[in-house]
Image 1: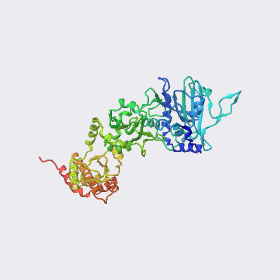
Image 2: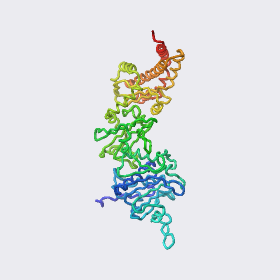
Image 3: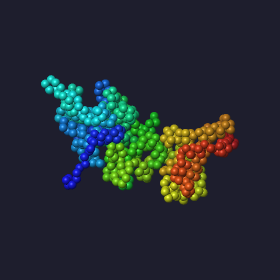
Length: 551
């Protein structure tokens, strides 16, 4: 019963609002505004559901604007909707709507003002939320309404129907518009929405939307205005990943997994210019990524070099930038968005963040056959010689592996059932993605794979010294044999060092941290730097390959 509880009050309301705004990640602003627009647009009659994102010139500066169809707000509703915590027509809850997302997420970057306009039944009202004298609220301004030839004083919500009509707004249908004024009157809030803190890349709007909204209701048309996308002049229709996957990706498959999970695997075949084919006609880059998908939105999104570095643990050691993996959680999964919807939390216990790495075993287990074939094709080009794995297997037996275990377990101390797969890489992008520029090798314990830098300085030095002791007129095959021999010599040395480091699990004087340090790229590079004793054997093999065949 309500009379059994005395409700808690708020002692300093202004401080609480300031704190909420200051703590909200500014990068969530676009998501919150667009989500509000989508939720309103879906209530418009079918065929009239639109969201437009565009640049609006105001006093000589371009300002970011978002306009949607759907039921407009009356004077009273617009006024109330601007309160923190107000959420008209929505069910509040930790897994639904918190009621302050768009306002809190926007005001931190727009102390000059966030302008709300809404048309309902032909009447347009306007509110300007901003910060003055250190306090956030509705900004009072001279009214646009005239009474007996004079301005009707200052107001914090204004009937601007006449102004909107003069500016060319359509008053025959309902709509709502939000305009971001930023921190300065001359600030371009399309190109620089946060006044450089944080900065945004070119065409950040479609990229941000693509990496957040996996799908939107197909009855809603979302348009990105001129200058906000990478497809030249004019406005363009925005397409989500769910919309583009069938027509633009060479392979895609959704695989049911345990506990109601579903894993989406997509492959973007290369075009002639080296980019993925899926980028054709897209408003943004469509390079590969991995993310958790929950109720139509993407969380824990990893792209570029971050995704490429982690990809081996998900069973994709090669060409990760061409693969997209989405781990879709069922709607009843025990997760809730955190306060500002930046990431998901487990609902219960310590409420840790939900991340893609939590499901890496599931992703590996359910990889479709076509993905495995593509990975095998890539691996053939980089796979080290079989004799290295055979020799490593002998070394493991000598050192007591795979019987070696330790109580704390972990990828470096569990049963190492077989030697690591050894791959020699040459592509600069692959080397950069694995942080191998200037380093000899990196060992990935989760996938038991060793990636070796075929362009490392020790390889080049061995090739140079070997070449200097041979005739000048070597055949192309002989030259290739020298390079391959130097690469394999370094790969062999580094791989043995990894095996010996892991075998230290039997020594109680070696901690987990010690072993991790021993297989770090920097430690493996020092091992690779000392290859002088491999030179005689490499020269002898090269000399034999350079000899003319017997007649």
